[in-house]
Amino acid sequence: MQTTFSLAPDLQQLQSVYARDGVVIIRGAFTDWVETLRAGFERNLAAPGPFAIENVRSGEGGRFFEDYCNWQRIPEFEDFILNSPAAEIAGRIMGAGSVQIFHEHILVKEPGTSKPTPWHQDMPYYCVTGRQTASYWIPLDPVTEANTLRALRTSHLWPKLVRPKRWASNENFYASEDDFMDMPAIGDDDPRILIAALEPGDAIVFDFHCVHGAPGNVGTNRRRAFSARYVGEDVTFLERPGRTSPPFPGIGQRSGERLREDWFPVAWRA
Ligand SMILES: O=C(O)CCC(=O)C(=O)O
Image (tube, rainbow, N blue to C red; front, side, top):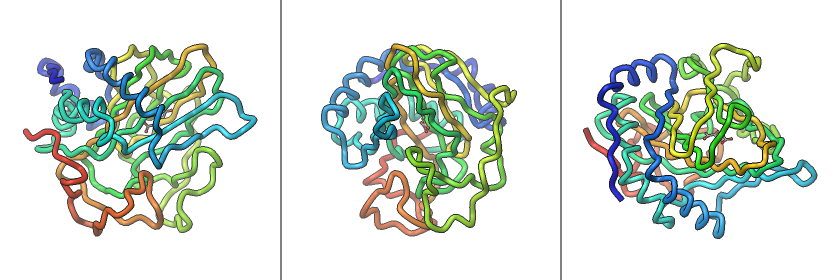
């Protein structure tokens, strides 16, 4: 399915807000894709991939499930990644001349899940570095301020990356962690926090360096979110001090190389 979405009247403003805050909300861009993505979720949940993660431990209540790097075997996800306006929107707001898909990611918080998603940046978990990055967070169920994603505006400009942790156990993600800083305390009423109720098919787009997190989902509705993560031409492979997330076993790349296009196809060119 091919669809378009015009950013024309708002493009300059979106670009400057994205550069300034590291996060923007785009409403209604993927409404036509919600059913396709829900069908992809069903296919993915019925047959999780090798990297699927359960973040809620026994006794904690609810379910917080994640999976990623399945788009090549889930036609609905492949269709979205290559044919929806997502790659073009990402390219235009991050000012890139071309956009590669890095990976997709699904996140499901079932009703009654008190486990929050801790504040974190995605970049320290990734095997890449660079400035032209864009992650989508697209709810497939209505979300309120009580269960939506929260993003900390301007945190993409912090001079150091924040130490990555395992969400289920809060253990350090890498054995050697010298190059990272601790996450500063972030109060619930911090004015930098971007938080908004969203409809299915709306999108939050954020820089890989943007600090974000989410509360649990103690309401009565599921909270499914689809993410597609794209990179521009200034992004290169980076060897981290351990297995990254996603791990991309067998990738065979060295620091400084552009991501290989047979694994990370170009989804849009200016
Ligand atoms: O959906 C969530 O709870 C967290 C999402 C997230 O951290 C991400 O998409 O990078």
